[in-house]
Image 1 (cartoon, rainbow over the protein chains, first blue to last red):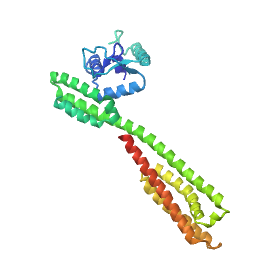
Image 2 (image 1 turned 60 degrees about the vertical axis):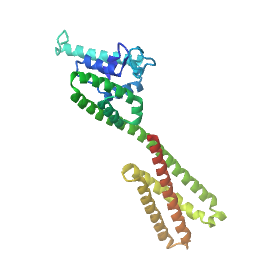
Image 3 (image 1 turned 60 degrees about the horizontal axis):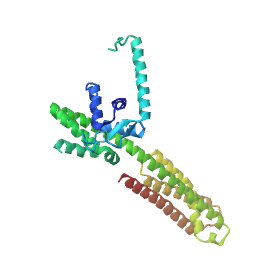
Image 4 (image 1 turned 120 degrees about the vertical axis):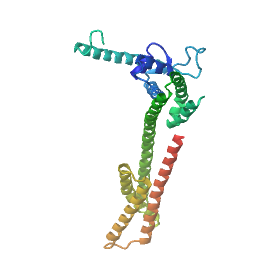
Length: 104
Length: 204
């Protein structure tokens, strides 16, 4: 779910774009199937984390049947809170010499 | 639309109808886009394996979520209706029993029906609800068996108690108990049929 929040953090995207973004960002380590993607989207819509756009950002450039999603204000707050939690964990790991200062 | 997309379109039937209506078209489009990309890379077989694994796990998850939601709300609703119905019938029978006790109506059959209706209604329904919640037997079969046993037990008790008491109208008592049995089993049959029809309607 955090991967989808992250994919939508910088811009609104349709389903296939979200899949591609997750795939590229994780260097192919995490591949989301259509069922997992839309199951997560359904739950995130229900929880108010994301919203469906009424209009397509580029109506002339893509298929009109695509639906676009973006982070809601609540979703952005949840994403920030989760990112901060992960950041603290990484800092803790670094302080215990589990990670180098560069984060590798 | 190529063969793979058609096959995936058919496989989407594994998801609950509402989920399919809401996201089926989008899923098919995502599949089509992914398939094109994978075909260019020559990795269609591994793509199909991943897609099928994704489909099996997520369709099962959506089905379980869906049936849980429908099942729980439907069960609670039919339980509430059945409990209220039983309580209302017992209350009405008890009230009629009280009203007709010292009137001419006590001479007619109605009182022979009201007595077992109240007694077996309280005892029988309690046991039926208890058994239908704790066992996996068919609720209608539970109702028929329990009411048969409870009515027979009550009749036996009357036989034992009346052996040393004043004479009783056996024909009236017997007709009263038979009618009471028919009423209670009939009501459970009606509730069961209505509940099943509602569940079927909500699925369509």
